Image (cartoon, rainbow, N blue to C red; front, side, top):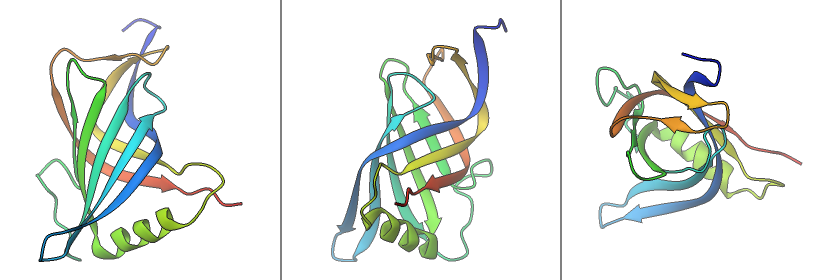
Length: 141
């Protein structure tokens, strides 16, 4: 790989909007985040987060938390994640507080992505990558 391309195993994002959803008569909850990518140029990511049982099990053998889908011809990534009920509640509460600037998050991926030094993503086909971990940063005053 030449010097103008690099491998990354994480995606950084700034949260633009967060919507809390109460779904149906069963009262299931979900959090939908719309994020701007910050270490990949010209892209966004729609993330759906749901609470799981306290004994959180992997969604698949490779993914501890969820999956990230990257379409070939669109600049919108999709992700669905599970968090423990306690972490989900903490996240909803943290996002509800006013902040001086947007919160951010980092997805740690099970596979590396190829990105140019200008931030352009290089993929050859639609890609689904397991998510190993997620970290949030909430600004304070």
